[in-house]
Length: 362
Image (cartoon, rainbow, N blue to C red):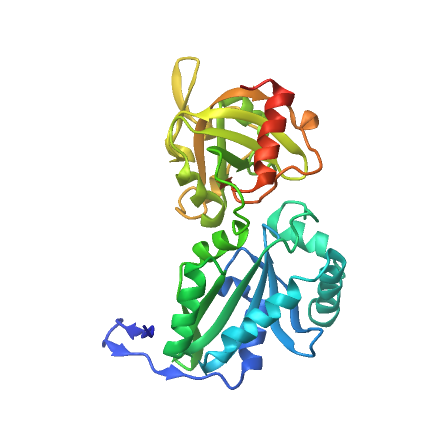
């Protein structure tokens, strides 16, 4: 079903804004390279016009906090089904890349376009405030077609592949001119969160064991000592980081990992997710939000009025916690940057069984 995007000006006389055109795909490529948040604020561009082994060129390469590589194929006009095959062909090549290959791609990109002289590790940390785990780098892929229109054959192909857990999606865009200024509008064909989830959970070799994985991104916005003391887990700074907390309900058991450090706790969820200023903790007989407690992090207080970027908390009754310096980390442990995940891999079962043994959890 074609997506029709129209903008109407309602200040004064109501009138339809005139649709415009880009001069060429290079213009679209330049805009998205410098402003990838137009598509997703949680992506980092790592390559442009990346030459494959087959002498084809990928328009843009990006990476998300899970180390998933995003292949972006740009078309300024209506596109046809060949572009889907082209994206899959690119993904087959990207899959073969080592971490060193990807670091080299970023170095070339930085040298030509950014001039920052950063390594991929540095750029990743500056963007996501977490260390890049080489084990998760390029462990999954997403294929994104950016086009003004898509023919009906291509739409059916994309929908079919997505239903069968192939992480492919389309972003439709339109250019409008308002008072002589070009503006861009975009709409996703499939919910982009669904595509990201497919990409990071495709390795479904075993049934889910009922245990939830938690990534606790410690830093200036949240602190593990606070979480141990008051009994909670949290995520925020963007919908991508907080939305998965909605999966949790009272009675769920959660295993908490601090990326780059290791596993630090296991507990039972006792309440549903709540915005940070709406969750109360008892202190000296008073019910107080986290912002009125003696804590070591700010919990995105400056974003509290923004529903998407605010911090969200879930109360947990801890069964076992250890300090960050005593975190348990072993080769073969499961890792993921989603705040909450329901892993279905053998690696997750191994991780839980091993932690149960180490911590004496039944």
